[in-house]
Length: 58
Image (tube, rainbow, N blue to C red; front, side):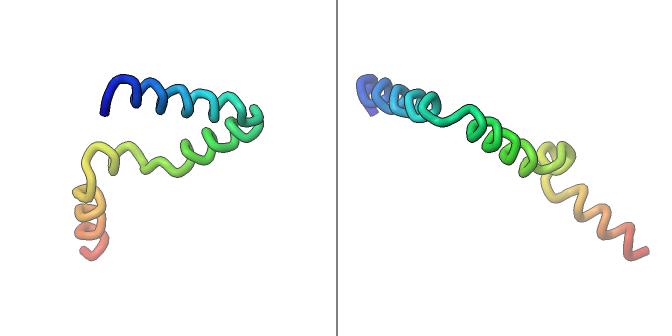
């Protein structure tokens, strides 16, 4: 990807973001934040889930 293509892409993304209404931008940001996995799964993956399932059985 050449520099010119990259600048063009970034410019298009910025313009599309600015053209959105403020309410829509905030709603998208809030939805993205709510869909984030918890911190323990983000950092350690499936290990906490496996351990919790193992201890729940006992």
